[in-house]
Image (cartoon, rainbow, N blue to C red; front, top):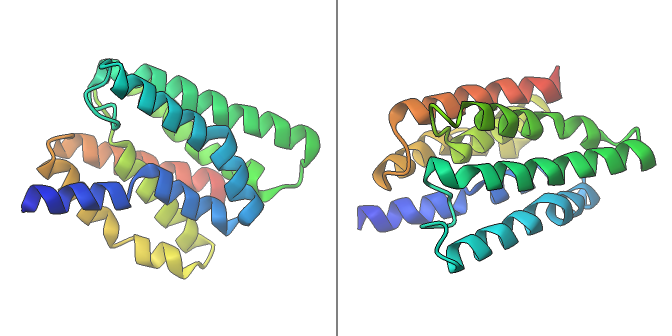
Length: 179
């Protein structure tokens, strides 16, 4: 029963969801662009890796599974940033991409030593940024972060240290957007 609840929490607060909430704050068009450039390519990567047996699950739970996740997510977000810089240089989404790109880059750099919780990192990034923007969604998401951390522990996807590092990196990445 506990495992099933933890699985549901982990799914409901998946980075795809929390990043989508953040992108929606910049508008429906921004959310659509993030979906096209990053979420869909990452979903395809996950489906291919899991169905081929290269990944044990869609979370890329093993450190050796994560480089492909970092590359596809990072390239997608950077491609979106380049496109926005060329076509819509005043888009608030352009600044908003700095946080997720930095969180992925820091997690990739640390991956050799620690498997940073991207679930907690992106939930923290989204909650902190949305709260800073005065969004009630950010305030609603904030108490869900510890619940998400609990779920990741129950599912044995992360250690407490990996969750804490994800939280710190997510908070720091939020500052790139809000300061």
